[in-house]
Length: 358
Image (cartoon, rainbow, N blue to C red; front, side, top):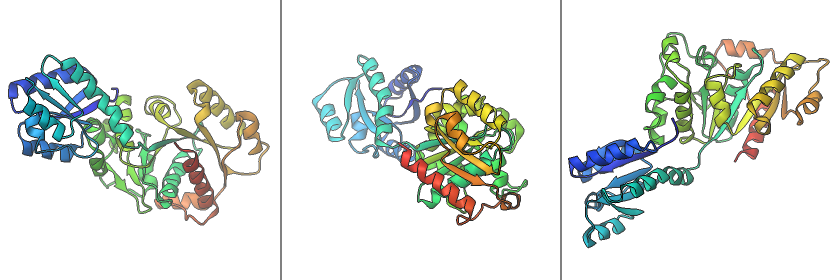
């Protein structure tokens, strides 16, 4: 599903409201998320849903002005001086006659999505991906989210390993503990205003928030790629940075993530198989210009960090050495301290991503 403008409709006449709602929904470019027939209902819907636009009768918006960020479009079945004055006082961006100017209304309503996104800076999306199993992508994604939070960035970590959901384990969530996940966000992702997204997120003690993969296998199977795209878009409207933890396989959710990511952190190990897998996948996905390379668990080897620039055309941003404390910390659901060698290396990565974002 492509992004559509979220509209609150406010009209007193039920029959006309039905006509307008069905017409705008059928365009495929807008979606009516609430209707109201009086000033009180309209004001409450705007406050709760924070829509991209309000399409309403001038008689209603004369009292209930849209909240900041919502574009007002007024509609009436006849043009009068009184209606035009009310629309102007309410700050309407346009006045349209129904049904004579319904096509013009639909175009203006669809454009409010771009107007809304321009007024509201979208978060930078960082995908963390390892071309080989066991590369430590989940470890790096989790610690990167914590490093961004330490730098006073509002960060959300999204677990896109829908089958295994390792982020919950790394965060110390027990098997018996219940939590909300992307399966809960997906059905309402295109309706939920930024202020309500937090209801499905879990807050880590380090300051970042998490959108978990479903704990139930059956729920995971119901999350489609289109749902992943909608969920990422909803989350990026509610924070500064979104960190996506990807699976090795570049299918389904991972493919969507690479498509929307502003930067892709490629987690490499110092061996030929890791380099070869990354080289082939990067070329196949066409993401060369967005890649940032990180070496994880570096040890003495015939393949060295210097070889990354020779193979991929740019050096690794950071090299994370082998750290014996990693396994113990992960088993306990804890993160490594920021002052250790690993913590300092991830902090350098966070600083680099912040400096190069947007």
